[in-house]
Length: 130
Image (cartoon, rainbow, N blue to C red; front, side, top):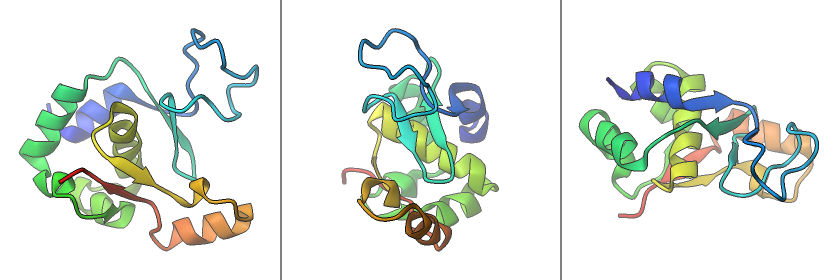
């Protein structure tokens, strides 16, 4: 199995819908508790029965530079994996699992149109601890 296959099986586009969270909002399309959903501006990502060790093993085998402590945008990771949407799902999954930190304009208190503009030029990045 490679990273793309793992992400396809264990990441879901959309907010967490586990139903087990006491603080989960009634509308699953709204903000979810931290650690359940990664907001990548264009869409949200939730994990489905993912394992951090297995995910990191696959990333290290195929894209070890994602773990080098430098920032990598979805434009870079998309070039690596062959699809920007799948790359963003991998970025979100890795953030949920604690593999790296995800930085997006969604974290900023700015207008939504500016968030989309910033995301469109690559301001969605990951950075693993060195």
